[in-house]
Length: 165
Length: 276
Image (cartoon, rainbow over all chains, first blue to last red; front, side):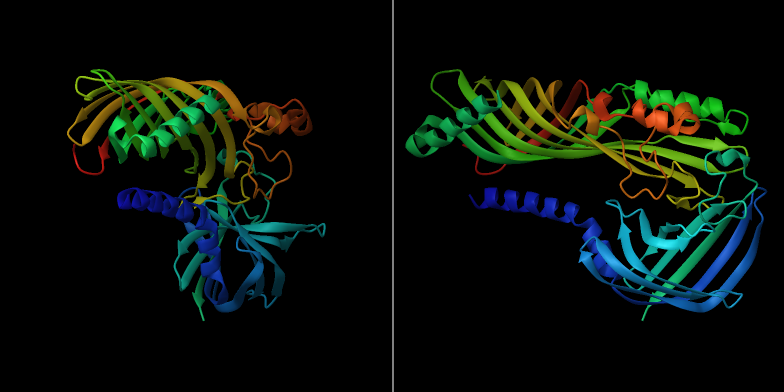
């Protein structure tokens, strides 16, 4: 009888852990993060790269409790090379498989339409996070040439390395 | 059939308390099996062919077409097994849960050095009931098998950049994690051989009825997509690009309907408790 209970407990445990991936990642992110470094790099199709922005301590990201375990609030503050300030506050969500981190309404296009910034999680540690997002040619967000990867001659990346305060 | 199985096991459970001596074996078990499953590749192959043709001038190595036999899954299983009855041929029955999955990788390389990856992942949660006869001093079991198979298919589409980072971002419209489900009632047979506390088995299953979701809900959708519609993964890639609104109204997206089929597998499990 003990064995049966043990098996059922193991199965229940496996279910519980598999269902909570989103919660675990999002729970781990709550807190204050200093953006240690930020880099914008152009990657050319011949393999060369050009760094167009490299900043130390350009801003902060505060992630706080949201409406649910899968959805947090974010407060993103960033000062770029031109001393332009970016300040965004909205929801931060991920997907079931933790492939992306989505800052809802994190970007406003030239028409004034708010769009999401989708970050790829490169490193996911308790005290360190590395996120990056990519664009095509020189357009970082929502490039017009977004169907055929074969026609691009360069790609732009924006990478944030963040450390928990 | 499902109700009948439940009634059967209710009877078996009732007998447990009333006639303990009636049972030759009552044990819990846990084990592993590997299953090969077929699927209908037409929907995904339509995308592959059209994508490769459309960008033929820029592609150095396109996505490969699927044969429909690539699907292999590892399962872990746990359940309960009974052998009961009198005489030389006994009855045997089991109920178990099996959870497993597998994946199939696909890649398209472009001449400018960038690559795109299309990974199909299968996740299955199965509740199985078996009933049959035990022969040769309970060492050989021949059973019919019923399975409720809750299948989930995940299609991950990413772009591998020149710095080897795989991005699911907004730089390419197809990037994303698309999911769909298909739930089936399956029937089959199982042959098992018991050696001491180890049981080796082979099983085959055929989906008979799709119990969900409805046909309208079988598209592969990226719930976190930040792109404009269509947000589903296309089967007809040409219409997805050339006539997006028509693509949606004509339902030319990839569906999970074809992601089911005959499966067969082999495995073993270990019976807990003392050997009689």
